[in-house]
Length: 128
Image (cartoon, rainbow, N blue to C red; front, side, top):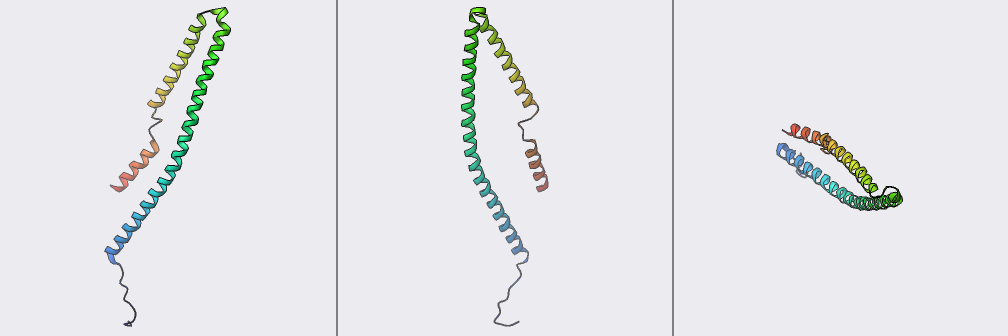
């Protein structure tokens, strides 16, 4: 070996572990940065979607109110106060159907993120 050439020593076990940890940390940091960037974009889209949904719900309420008022006005001469009772029963039945459908969805676990929870369990089992 020539004295002018620097001696390059292999990193060894400690150097390898340090390099691996540095690379793993860099990977985690880059994934977190990517997730944060995407989350900020998704957050803006979610806010926009919620505003659109709220306006749609408000307009639906107005449509139901004016539709109901029209039905009452047209049927009042024929049925009198009974049209109000008929509309009350119709809306009560529709509400009960929707509540039962919502409870059924909750009992089926439709809001439980089953695939995500499965993957998290798999990750936990692999790390333990």
